[in-house]
Length: 495
Length: 34
Image (tube, each protein chain N blue to C red):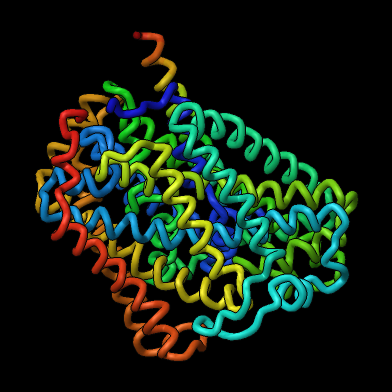
């Protein structure tokens, strides 16, 4: 079975950007900037982009393109005893794919609500009480809410249809439409919002620099964390996507381009969000600090409240939620594609079979997030996956590639295939800077979580739904590694 | 907006979108050579 390939370079870049640009760029980056020194945060952020984001992206593009596989096959080819890391990354994806879809489902509902501002004058009560019907805890989920489950099923159908069609006719085709549309919509919203009263005041709050924060190590950790979370690196997606690159495809320039586009989009999203918050503060006679928000609260409470105040809310409201929807869908498609690619590599399944199995099981399993306690479960699982799953996976990958194997092989491969060469800078970043920063962040998070817990949840919930999930994923990876034939032995002649 | 806020916003946009422009230029040059 011949490995599928991207039809064009633009198709690959747009798909990679579609994966990297997600909800986090819109609802996390602006708040992180505001909270960590405003405009001054851009200095550590851009430094982290150059010393961690771009080198990691080059490393993943090189590994995927050279070894022609998703994570399990790539690590199995490096050493058969390392296949567990690939499956650990795939299980991280599987869990993210479930809860991320729940947020996309909410976004679909809110896209519909936004035409008539169905949330009324109190979006907070509407979201938590009427829409989510929030009750229980991470371990007491309650009944499935069908008004949430149906939009989730619709989102699964879109992902399934795209992945089922394949790399060129599904993912590439859709990315070539969705990504330009996303950028144009964000630009349109920025232009429209910048003419509203208070928008510039909002931007001032986001970018006003507090240079004293640059001396705070936590701000630098936050900048590196944001880069690692937002680029889809360290959990198989970029390995799978680059494994579809045709021979002689560029590595270095494509990696630079993908990272620059992702970070550039984050800045645009920040301008859009803080311009909007500035308008809201002015309209309500409040300070921007009183209305600023992030995450689920920003998307489903603050944004609806702003939309209520906007001129022509029936146009700008749907545009806001369509922006979130496209950013979320393109990332979810990449998550499922990386899982499907791993199963095809491992079990030699057809794409159609793998897509049916993954999406079929996914649609059923994701329903646990459509329950009364779904948001609580999502919150706990998301925290542990982000803070311990992804970061640990990135750290182990860097140690393996940077210290156990010859990093010079990767540099050589990347330079041989690229329009410009990289050198010592890349090696220093992969071997020293990135692992050191990641180890610091993981230690900090571990210390905080062990001593203070998280979010006021009961320890039993954190043990089972948090630590339990992480340990479970690790055990699954190790069991697959021990008890199955290595991915690298199966159809290795393709590579 | 204060001058420093504007300067940092422009700095961020220039690094990222300027980077995109440089990468595209390199890609176009390489494509023309082929």
